[in-house]
Length: 478
Image (cartoon, rainbow, N blue to C red):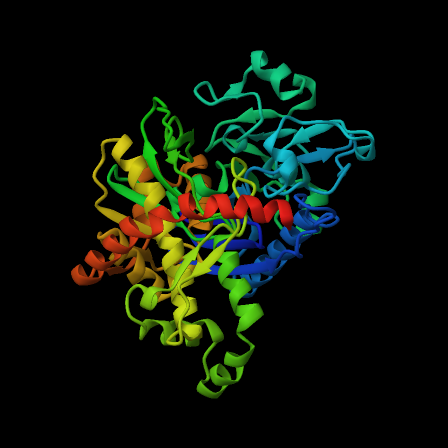
């Protein structure tokens, strides 16, 4: 079947829309940045006004404009897969409008069951971001079963609501949308949504899973000994599992974007790539002119400088706790080991090394618990554009690290789900072969790996035990 497939991928920082030909080639894309999160008080985070829906409309309109300019006709667009950030909560009125701004995954309210607040007003529906955008596009009160993570009464094995869990989640069935499985059609674009977004009326909108699961599918990380590391505001690591979920102290099972499959995910880095942006914005002013003089962006300049720094950043260590975990709210980020040799290049490299150390110390125990030797990493997200970052993953993990030709793996995963739903492919493996184009593979440097192993074992893995008592006291005083 020939035509075009669309992936709608809405993350923490932007909405991306990509249109693919069914032979695997990308035709066009558009991206709309989201506004900065509103922080009304400590430990709360909300998307301002109706920013998610606004950004989806703008990205869709821009992508469709380009689609038409390139000769695309509305009837040639076969379906759109929808993926929206996970672990958020959306409160809707009966008329489908927001009762309250979308509550982001970094908000402390999402660590506990739903509690109604008087300020919310009249709340008819409690759903996820994917449920909300589905309703905006199709008018349906349907959602993917695979985006209900946390305090939701979802039975992941049956992929349906569990009435026995409702009281513990402080929810009633009538407050919740109906759910479908990944790969099912959620509904069709309404006339009102078509006018708002530029999408063709009647276009099928297809359920995927949560954003990281869709990214794993779109990255082609399907082998048992292959792990995806997703470089986003939250940096996660995951591997695919079979039909029977397992649990462990080192990972959690989630519904995968592959029907009847599971995804195992370990702990990650909260505010992971945000930390890199933080460094650039707060301390990169002196490098801006240097970058302009060389005709490159500041990230490329910093990466080039950091590539000339020795493995281990000459003893400069960064501990990534810029957003503390729920079980240790006193934790803070730490950078230790400064001496007179250190420059901005050392600090930038240390930030990257700290991310990779953290992910290794979470991913290795998961693979050991699953009894799977790790053979390869697939790195996804904008950070995969950095040769330095890719080499650090290979050197610190000691296995090859691959990036794909297209870094926006979630958009590819959306298009795969859309194509499967309308019969473009009969098998997910064929879809992955068509749409996932492998890029460069970075091989580990044996000497660097040996040095990083020593640094990790003797220093990095000891940092929490050494710093936690001091940070607890600092928290009480700060």
